Length: 119
Image 1 (cartoon, helix red, strand yellow):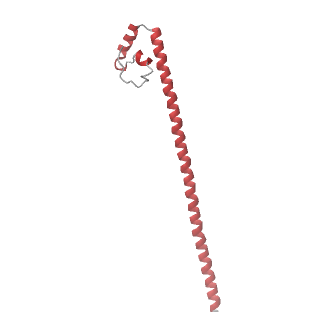
Image 2 (image 1 turned 90 degrees about the vertical axis):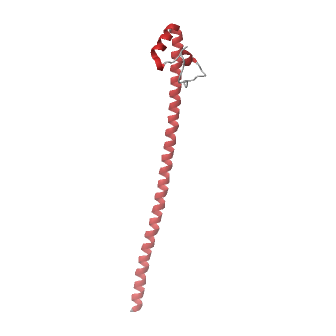
Image 3 (image 1 turned 30 degrees about the horizontal axis):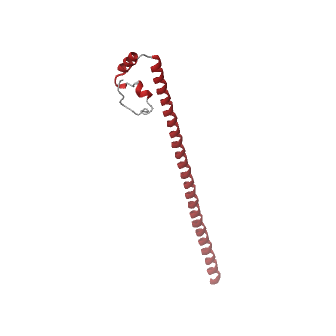
């Protein structure tokens, strides 16, 4: 009878250890799976951030080109439609916000000259 108790006890102990072992193995697999999932999500997020800044840079380039076109148009129109006296009067009226035709027309001074002078 003691043999049956020992065999039964060993069987129950083996069964319990098997269940515990499988639980631990499943937990580790689950963690590995979730780490891989998080890495994929991070990669996707980084790609979205990269795409966002690339598109933003393109849009700013387009905006800069548009501003240059507006400045060129204004300079050409001012030279064609206004007299030198009218241009001087307009520039004086603008005070600290003055922008000269020379400033607008100059290719070398692409609109980064902050303090243009009155011509």
